[in-house]
Length: 321
Picture 1: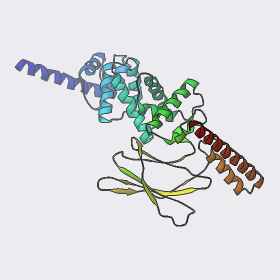
Picture 2 (picture 1 turned 90 degrees about the vertical axis):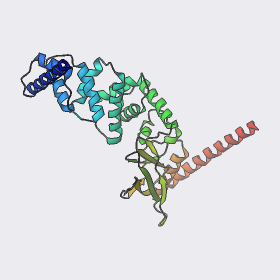
Picture 3 (picture 1 turned 180 degrees about the vertical axis):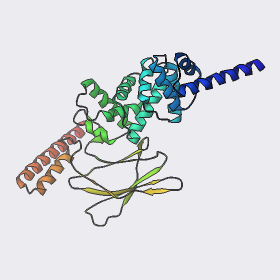
């Protein structure tokens, strides 16, 4: 009706004038309340309104929900998005929005190496008590790799989920850093890793050869997309072994080739000291140092252990028969 159109035009005019006054810093609590209720605009303008309303100690909860939703939808960045989220989280009403926000930032932490505020990781951990979220879980595990103050409860939590993720085929190199703190699955032991991150829609291939074997041809294999475009390839390298490699990524009409790199055994990763792999590496080191006495002792110890293992295996085989 004509009256309805008139009211709508009047409301639009008042909203426009209120926003104009706000932009020029000539506003009061009433204008802010009106804008909080009706204004829709760019992410940065909503954030500016939020800051002003916080200064007047107004209820900004609904604006925070709109602002966070708009940030995620448009991927628009504001300088204090964490501050907006922190205030919203105090009286959260939409847990789906919280999950989406945490997942978005966890993804950028894992894939784009974005630095995150410590508080976000604390909230991720709290939310993991209520529902599974592998993106936030893996981000939290990565963030705590160097944390020496983890409780036994947290270490048990990490051990359980690393084992679960590995069974799903999600094997990420930083999992191995927990080897001195928790029991790790066998797939993480004694390995050296190459990681390549790209658009998950692209096919990634690694071309590699072991040096020291003449002019060996490159072997080509597809690099598994382990998680969200994080491609990982593992190698079992002995002391002083070196692999030369380069990587190609293929899209619909384009192929990108990286430079040539080298992966060398350095002994810095997690290794179980009683494994045959570790003992062989120690023997190779002793041989290089010309420490014949130590080498003979380790060889004798290695042969004894192999004999005992073989004897135990034969005995178990006999029992089954």
